Length: 371
Image (cartoon, rainbow, N blue to C red; front, side, top):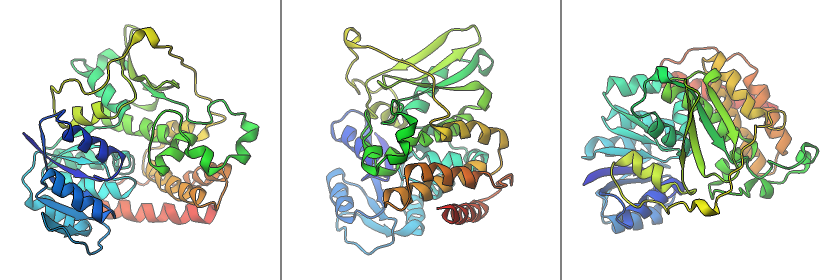
């Protein structure tokens, strides 16, 4: 049995992983669980899965009689230091997940990474930490998981470009003139995936795809000129690669995160997702409209700038999305806040986590001034 620690166990990715383990879809044993604030759910899951230890990262006091308990990120570090496990699944949402990624790698664990902010904000520094500890970073996002599978057995020289698919979100066909009246409820109504509030808004603005473009560049070593994005509303084709001979290879499957999660944690599992019925498929593709979704276009200019620009993009997006969700700003203002923050000088090369924290705080301050 593969011993796994799941961080962010009460969120969408963590819940899907636990459901797969509950249904015996993979030879996985849960030895540690972490949540941010859902103490009762954390205790209940620890009892159900027989976890040896649990951590509540918001630092609040809680009771869990059937497992060793830890609090805060210092507690998480201690828990990871003391637990015997094979791999950590980091499904913590947002910038906070970066700290958990660095702790996991630093404690000598392979990292199944569902927290794209770790790669976007830390960039090459994250991979330097992984190499220093001789650890692997395995992507969990469906798009990057698909690319990882498609690249197996291929040399970098044989692949011309990566092709990421995007559903297009709820506003794919809405006239741009109506964007000024977009409500929070409309932005949260994703047509394909059921996700958390922040990522749902990012999918509406295509900021999520922008983050995935940046993540793909770091994960697979492709620059922005060799990464493509295509709109695919059905979300059946998860990603593709274009080889130098002109052929395109794709991974297809029903929209279900079970496959990329379990593939990141183990190999050789069977019957993870429902089989496709090709007789009922109708697949549509179209080019992204960068005028209507400028945050996606911004990703490619960020890759050319390098430095800490991607970190600033993420920080500004988190601030702006939070303000949009609480009704403080409009949808269009959300876009503008991110754009204006990224316009600042972010060319500083990242060397350590303290620097990341300082730059993140600076970017959030600038973004708040633009609200």
